[in-house]
Structures are given as structure tokens and as C-alpha cells.
Image (cartoon, rainbow, N blue to C red):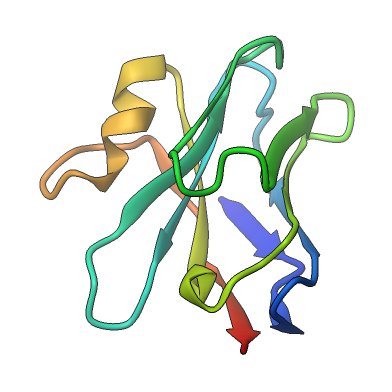
Length: 126
């Protein structure tokens, strides 16, 4: 399964680095992504990265502030969060899927993504 870490409480403008490590499987053949869910809101897509790491995709509101990356040798994916805003407060989930489009659709109710983590809380104070 996937295990996220690195969440916490930070002031607006601050930074955090989230990690997603795999247990019992190799991530090198999976598209990796991050989603988030704020209280009372639906889960939303944040970012995804291709198997090789050469293609990255972000939701508009985080583009330029967040950076997704991966280290296949360490079986880990990362999400660098910078210039954080209170509206970034949410539980952040890591996800993995063999298909690029299926990973992106992970925020759609009823969709299927191969693997999910349990989430890590990010709280940004004003």
C-alpha cells in the first residue's frame, strides 16, 4: 500500500514536502498522483507525474507553487508545496495507477484508481 508523510501545520507562505512511499510493491511502472480533500468538499486532483517523470500535470490553482516529483530508485513520490495558502488546507492523498487518464479521473465519484494512501493532513494558518 501507499504511505504518505510530511504533512503538518504551517503559516501562509510557508512550505512543506510530502512523501509517498510504497510498501510491498514497486512504483516504477505506475503513474503517481496527489489529490486533496478539504472538510465538506469533494476530493480534487492536485498533480500527476508520468512513469519516467518527464510529464507533469497540475490543477491550475497550484501550478507554479507545487512541484510533483518521483525517485523510482527509492520507490517514492513527492509533492513540494510552496507559498502555501489557507485554502490549501486539506488531507492530501497519494495515488498510483497504471494508466495516465485513469489516475487523473481519481477525483470523480465512482472512479477506480489502483492504489490510494490513507492521507496526510496539511493545515495552513492565515
